[in-house]
Amino acid sequence: MKTFVLVSIALIWLAALTSCQTRTGAHFFPGMQFDRDGRLIPVGSESLFEPVSGSYYLFFYGANLTSVDHMERNHGDSDAHRSLYLETKRDGRLDRTVKSDLLLTGDFGTVYVEKTCFYNRPVESNYSSVAIAFFSNGYDSGLETPAVLADAPRALPPVSSISLIRLIRNKADYVLVAADYESTGELRGLHLAKANGGKISTNGSSVGSGFRHTALDEYGIPFTLKVDADISSHPLRLPMPRVSEESTWFIQFFDFGKLIQQQKLRAGVPVSSRWLRPSVTKEEQIIGPECDSRLRQQKSMGLPTTGY
Image 1 (tube, one colour):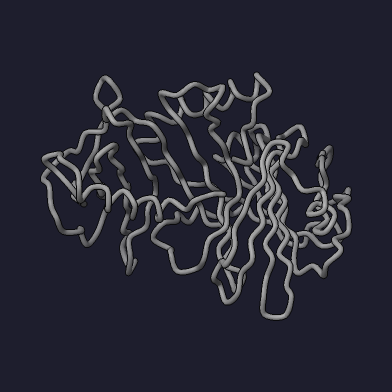
Image 2 (cartoon, helix red, strand yellow; image 1 turned 135 degrees about the vertical axis):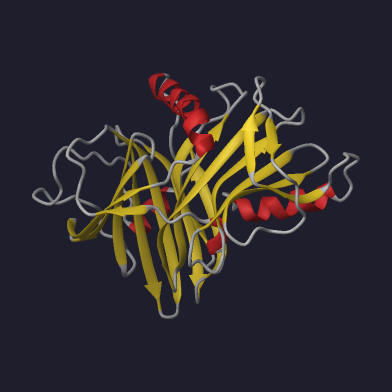
């Protein structure tokens, strides 16, 4: 089951209370950098109070790791939002980053894309991934809103993965279904959730070979999904769900999530489309190439790059 990063931050904060480090709990800094060994180093004057504007870094010091939220409070925004989450190993070296970009929100809750990158771990056992996730409404500070492009880019990078989202309504309740596929069409992850009034009540995932075929049949999720042509002229043929369907969304991720096309489908044909481009933080300009290199290595080895 996916665990939303905000929850893990709260646990880290509790762990920090018992830490024997000089610093404990939350500390704010105007900057951050990596040293030559890949450790996260705060830069600038330390404060226990949150800045009222601009970009800043929230460090949580725990007993076994340090977490860092790169926060942004744009002009006119009432609240800051997190543009990147970073986490260290016990020795302070970078271990993991998580970027969460909003896709959909409504009475069904929040649907977002989560890009997780691992560092200083074996590629064979720790999969970096771009996948769909669900959470309750009301946690906007934990999500980035990607830029909406006016038109489709002229030159498109390769499609790296595909996701299919189905939102199913039963009176006041919703069932959220998301399937993550490799660019080859292989199903890697299936995520199911129930929601009411924007609050997620149950949230579960299946990955690898742990798919419940009854769930695939019930919600009309194909075991393979191959897109060979423009679906605006060649409808995407999907199984009919056994339950009444509210809406279907087809998401294509280009170059491991650097560019996203989000299309709403009706009878397999797009009825709306938009292009999204997530932001790139200063840290990602430095460590992003390593994450992409690991994802390309996973792909070349036949390992998952989505669904996790």
